[in-house]
Image 1 (cartoon, rainbow, N blue to C red):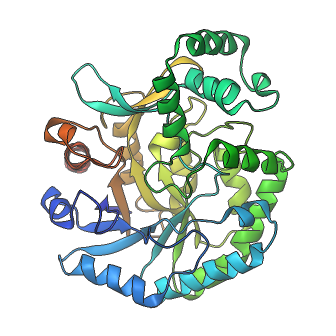
Image 2 (cartoon, rainbow, N blue to C red; image 1 turned 180 degrees about the vertical axis):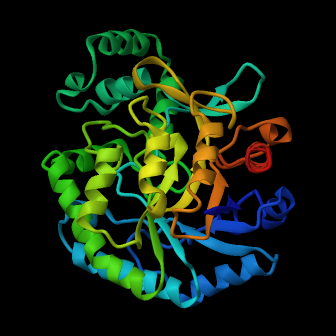
Length: 387
C-alpha cells in the first residue's frame, strides 16, 4: 500500500496551476470535469482533453474526484434510473482511458459543510471551520426548518439564540452564503427556497431508506467498475453526523461494515478521509484503517481540532486532534495486507497563508498551505519508514 503523492486540481480555471502542483513534488492529479452538469454523462472526448492537459505536464490523472451522484438517485425518485445509466456510461468512458480510481459521496443535498472559510488562526493564516452554534443559527433563524430546535441540545439552542440576536445583516448573509453557495467540489448551490424544498423532500427518507438506496446504486454501478478495473472509493460524510435533519449514512465504522457486507466486491472501496472521519471523537481512525485496509483505494490526510459539541477547525496537518503520525504508521503497517500495491494520497486542504492570503483561491485548496501539508506528510512517511 505504498502511497502516491497527489494534488487536487480543479481544471484550467484553477488558480493553482499544474505547473504549481508539479513544483510541489506531487506525481498524481486528482481532478474532475466540473463544467458538466450534475447527472449528465461525461463524453469521452471531454475526458480525453482533460487527461491530455494533465499528461502534457508529465503528470498522471490518478483519481477522478468526483463523479457526482444526482439527488434523484439518492432519494430514488423520478427518473433516477436515467441518472444511474448516465453514471454507468461515465464510468465506462473513464475506464476506456485508464482511470483506475473514482471517488464519490452519498451525502444528501449538501456536500462537505463549513460555517467559516476565513477562520483566522493565531499565526495569521486562515483555516476552514465548522461551528455547531452557527449551524443552529442558520437552521433555526435563517432556514427556519420546522422543529429544528429538537436537533440540538438546550445549551446550543440558547447560545444560538444569543448569537443570532447580536449578528449584523452582513454576518447573517455571510453565514448563509458559506453554507448554501457550495464549497469546492460540491455538487450544487442553493437559494434558501430551493434548499427548503430539498430538506422537505428528504423528510420522508429515513437512514434505513437512504442506505437501501445507496446499496441499490452500488449494485448497479459495481459491475461496470469491475469490467473496467475501476476502484470505487466512497468518501465519508463531512461532518460525520446528521445536519439540518438530513440522514447521513457513511459516518462510522458500523456504516462502512454495512456497505461492504452487502456488497463485498473489492471494487466497492473507501476513500479514507482522516479529517472527515476524525471530526467526531467517536471514530477510532486506526481501527478503521486496520479493518478496511484492503478496501482503502484513496487517502485524504488532514487534521482537525475539536471544539464545542461537534465544532472543529482544520488544523495544521501534524497538529490538532487527528494523530497523523499514528495514521501514517497504520498505513505502512498494513501494506502487506492491502490488495493494492500503490494508493493515491493527497494532502486534504491547507491553510491560506503567506502570499496566498492575497490571492483568490478555492477555500481549503490554496497552493502554499497544501504544499506545506504535503511536505510534512512526505517527511513523516520517510521518517517512519527508515527510523
